[in-house]
Image 1 (cartoon, helix red, strand yellow):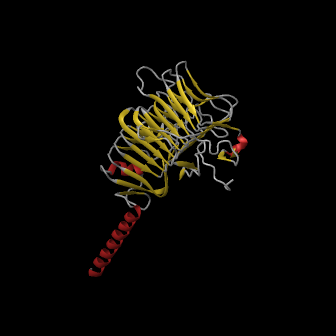
Image 2 (cartoon, helix red, strand yellow):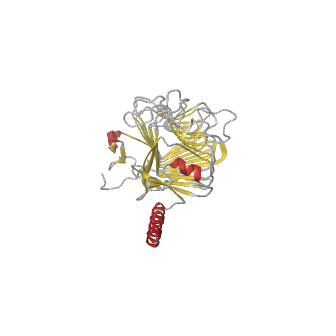
Image 3 (spheres, helix red, strand yellow):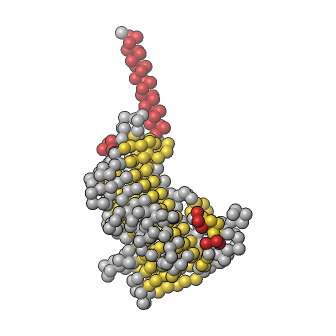
Length: 394
């Protein structure tokens, strides 16, 4: 009997030790996956407490959806992407793969794929709380990658993430659709190949769209690349923006196209050091129809046909340091490689930039494919466009 009891104690200690080791490898308060007590992300959603971290082991979690009601959660994929893939019609609350009702949520290294619901407005993530930070996530073939409601106390930050596909006929779904929040910050992301709708749509009062790649590429069918329908303060710096041949609308950026007297009081758009390419036969690079809109266009590269901006009578535009290029001045425009070739007119063509209410408009980074970044290294005067010319790198 004593031998049996000792063997049992040894086995229990070994099991506890292995469980502890697994938890250490997970590095979170709650661990999810085949080797843990919690097998599915929805198990952690039901168990978590405010302020906890959730680690989800890399792998595929089929048709598992969840509602997170807790505040201050940090949710991470561990050892690679935790892939949440659902069949059409599978959702939490008829809305999304994950519905986030809590505040101050951080999500990292999670894939959301396949969200399609009855009202054609399904999302990878539906944000109903306030303050979301998203890093290194992947959204594929959802009606909306992210969909948020109205919350003027909320800030949304999305970094180093990829949004592929998205949109549905009728215009209610988009690559991302951010409602009327205080601010949206997009940095170092890759948006591409929307089926319908816009690649980026935001009703935020302030939009920081910085160093992203936002493109139809060869066969995307997006409407606008960037749509800020209520206007507000738009700061668009250092992006690679391209419109393909199969677009629905003919503008790359739309600003204030749905503006009414009840919309955001500030109507200012700053478009600085972007590379904007129109592969369609005609078009407008920027469409800002509201008369009181103030537009500042500085140090951008424009390639392809179309007017640089279109406003109604009374619209204000400040424009300097911009350069129009032919496609053969890029490293490989057919492959959407918009690095500058030697002797391009854009080299050293950039003008000095002001500071906007403590925001320095001078580009400090560059987008690096896919969804990465690097410091921008200007050698002498700033080049026009999103990418600084690097000698001997072509």
